[in-house]
Image (tube, rainbow, N blue to C red; front, side, top):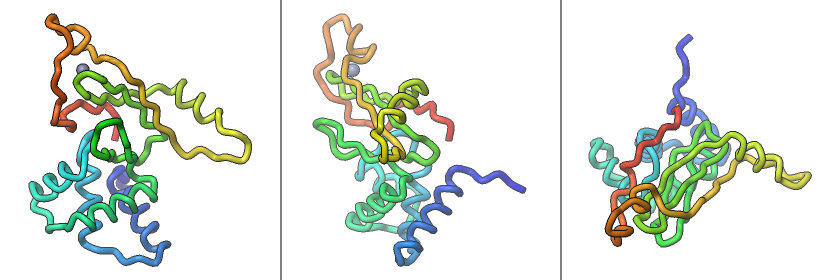
Length: 170
Ligand SMILES: [Zn+2]
């Protein structure tokens, strides 16, 4: 018996989800999921288009991209983040219950962090009758780099948002 990777498991879940909705499998949706699973950390729609092209995948329209990302979010396979002053960011989230982030208000860096104690507290906070399936916590502040820049905080925003290291086990 071979072990199922998160990517294979995500594909299984997505196929079942699509089927339950009475929709068809399409090569486009499969290609998008395949790329989404491989992008570490956050990405926006342009980064995803770029990845799809770089991997020589079939060309996909913007509408199909949005549509598929919405389906993936509905299926619980990706997280959608609407951080202040940012384009909508997406993140492959299969196998995680919470996505917590530190956001630097100066340079715009976004760093994911894990905290089991926080996750447990948040899961317990739900009122009776509500069954939490996940959460997302945003902590605003200054990152180490901005805090210790001798000339004061840098005054430009980073444009590359997918370069941070993601330590999650996937
Ligand atoms: Zn910073």
